[in-house]
Length: 344
Ligand SMILES: NC(=O)c1ccc[n+]([C@@H]2O[C@H](COP(=O)([O-])OP(=O)(O)OC[C@H]3O[C@@H](n4cnc5c(N)ncnc54)[C@H](O)[C@@H]3O)[C@@H](O)[C@H]2O)c1
Image (tube, rainbow, N blue to C red):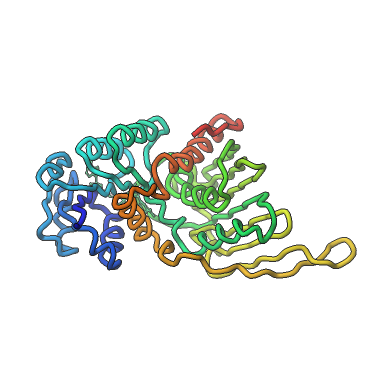
């Protein structure tokens, strides 16, 4: 039986969702888009036209469209400030919800949505597409294998200069809230550790075309004495890093670097006598499961599998809140100039 889905929020990102579903045979088979909801009805109509969804119910009231279509699931692609109401409405009406990141605009709202999911017995998971890519899966597999010994540090550099225009150039904490969450989440996943505390220096550098917070430098303490550092700027002109960041992973017996694209280099300690012992290269095997490397499509598949089997989705909200807590911890540290403990 197909799952009846409503897509709520028919802006720029919604096309990525619909393309992922259309281009992935298993998802196209499993999901029927029965409704499109947007406060701007014209946006929903335009999306229906573009994706040939003429049978889908169109509306601007999510509760009404859920009732009319008897939907099983809601795909939430609204702007973050509308998220809490949309997700609450959907779960109270009996739908499982897959939300875009960030899962909430505050930790209190995030916690309330986790409680509501437990109370209603619905699955509530978050799109964290940038951990579902080949490179990040490969890093995790490599770290887990113990090939460079025990993990001690992860260091990510993110320096790009996109000229987006629009809401990003007007918002507070733009890099931390809108982008860094992807790298924070990926680092947490690769490390397999719990974030415990953060110290962060955030700036809006000279020459920035954003209103606030286009650069951030954060040091996180993870469990088991692992340190994660992030240096990022969204107004760094010149030769840029990858959108996935440039990574250096340090273990007790070796290091791995990843350029955020196809370049992986790993080596362990060599046997040369003297000051530096040299190094011996080691292989970085491809990810184990290819189906986990397709961004949005992989997250949607994990959500559908959770509904079908009861298996916990990898990006279930009760886990994803830890990535959100990293972001809010960094923001609080930047504001107060203090080290902030992360409690989620
Ligand atoms: N995962 C990623 O890589 C990625 C990339 C870009 C954006 N996003 C996320 O996707 C979400 C949407 O971003 P976007 O770029 O599509 O924004 P957008 O502004 O283009 O689209 C948002 C849509 O939501 C609609 N909307 C607002 N309030 C609503 C409400 N209460 N009910 C119904 N519809 C409502 C708006 O009218 C608009 O059409 C954000 O959370 C953003 O962070 C994720």
